[in-house]
Amino acid sequence: MKEQIVNYLNQSKTKEFVDLLFSFIDRTGQKDSDVYNRVGIDRRLFNKLKKGNRVLCKENIMRLCVSLELDLEDSQKLLGSAGYTFSTTSDFDLILRYCISNKIYDLETINGLLYDYTDAVLC
Image (cartoon, rainbow, N blue to C red; front, side, top):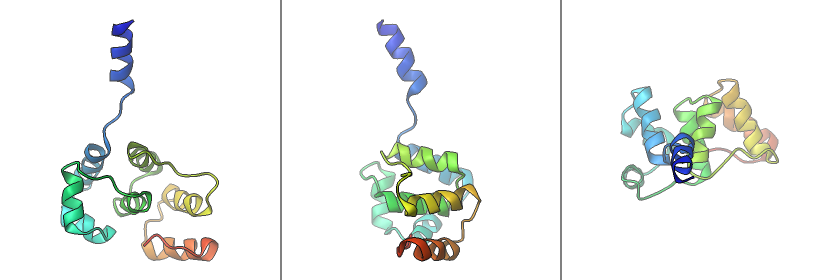
């Protein structure tokens, strides 16, 4: 049984948030400074994040998903690695999920849709 548990853990475990985030950043070829400036994260916070000393709030992770132009599957993976998910009861989350699913990554467009339906914006 011990071997089965070890095999299950090895097959089921996903990357931790920081590892997953930086694999996505590396995939885009963006510099760290481009990412944290675009998302609106302070450089010091980003460096703490990079060292694994911090996990971001859900809204910042959503901004990262948009900034990195992640597809829905990768966005769900990144949110899930930090313990979050797109809520199916939140208009805000559903609109953001719609935008990502339809490759709408322009923050002005996204914020316009969010504001029209939720009176809130992503950033």
